[in-house]
Length: 123
Image (cartoon, rainbow, N blue to C red; front, top):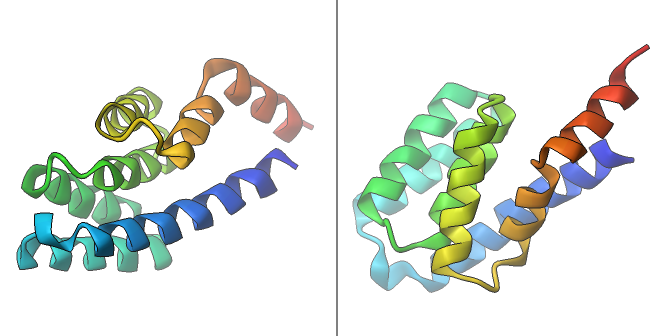
């Protein structure tokens, strides 16, 4: 159940991020948009290192766009870099306090939630 919830949150995060980033296009350079597209493509193709690299570039180009940090956090979380993911989610929330998806992902990345997930996977 936790796995399906996480999967739903990932899809919701991606959809929200694309929508929000489209709305914030004035803050984004063509170069940032290109890297967003490359990051989302890498996500679809499960190329985690490329996904992280692309969203790190986006964060560098658009440091005040909360969804960029949230997408970086998603990629880092999938790589198992929980501390860096936590920092990315917290940055997203600082920029945009009502970013519910980032708050939910931050909660799922807590040590307690990770322990529950680990126990559920154990034989």
